[in-house]
Length: 102
Image (cartoon, rainbow, N blue to C red; front, top):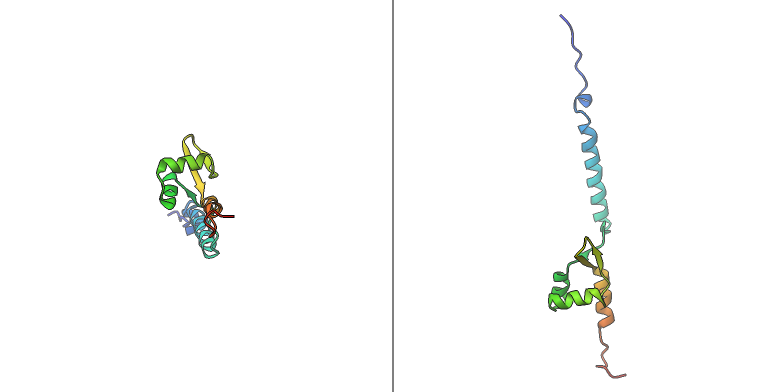
């Protein structure tokens, strides 16, 4: 009778253990960045979100995004606005308490 040696469990996994470890490390780094309150990428807003925040029509939002409001364009017709740019636009647009008088 021939004796067959059983391979260790690590080898029979076919590298799945390494993949699981990689996924775990990825989850850990995401959890760490969340705990540090540093988002992996800045928030990008759609025209509909801009129009909702500013309480204007989508058409007006697109006009702002093309001119007064810095926008990110990619993939042809896709246009987005960074949340920080929208906040800066709002701050620039705020009128002082003097109601237009110098």
